[in-house]
Figure: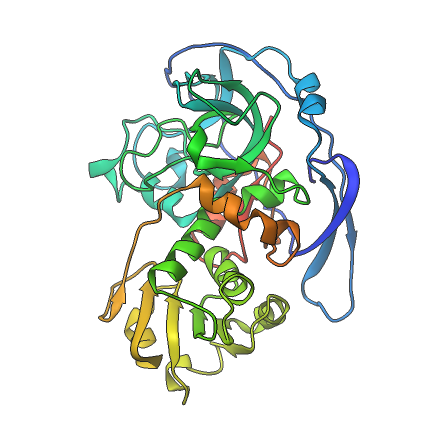
Length: 390
């Protein structure tokens, strides 16, 4: 289901199925502030297009960015409490609890309060919940979630460009691992610094927009750090994943790659080709490290840096997002930046770059535990999105 204003139809590749309900709530104390609610309408149509099997082409009537006045007219008072997913200790998915009485976060001078319409999960979400970054984490209890798409319902005194009613998207944590927000996006409301947000692309609905921020910013920053430019070649490991699927498209459409190769399992090769891959490699049947050709850049989004360095040209770069790093590979932690999203919005609005949403989703808000369990299998295609959010 996609939140929408019936205006323009947008096609994008996604896949879908659905997973079993989660455990009921345990309250956690949070501070109070004020109140608001947003009703939404949803519509979606599914069609099957020849040649795309096993992928489903979903055509959605998208929110052709309803004017701020239309959205603003739907807003009522902001509540003092909200529904949210929280954890009060580090651990497996069982530490996640649904709480209907979490206080709506206070808005600082440079922040806006966003009514969350859709949110998305990233590997950093479960690694953080497992306590892998506890030395630099915010205090517990935590409302998880980095990616958000929603509507501004309140603005801080120093906010310059955003206003109530604006449809926005972004990664709410400027530094992914260094003091991330205690109140994340898996809640009805979240407070976000204005500089981390951008206007939602007009042709995308909230589900599609929610699946972009952290992944597209990671893809873009990694390519920039390698000095990637027109005429260069790239190999993307895990090309069907959240970051990989966007690295492919940015390398081709934004940076002007001469050749894009990518790896995936057999069933996802068609998806790779639809994203613009010139050489789709089935990792179940061949070893990419045995390829005779070398690449200017290898973007390792799966954790195979030791093999990746074997297929990079002399003087080339290997980006390693996870796993051990083998020289000349390097790792970086993305910095959230709304300016990057604004820069990429024209490519999204023109359809040159498309979000890829995993087939098992979107997961409803009641099934956040199942969504976490699924993303932890490392088998997701594109992004795992949570929608609708109450």
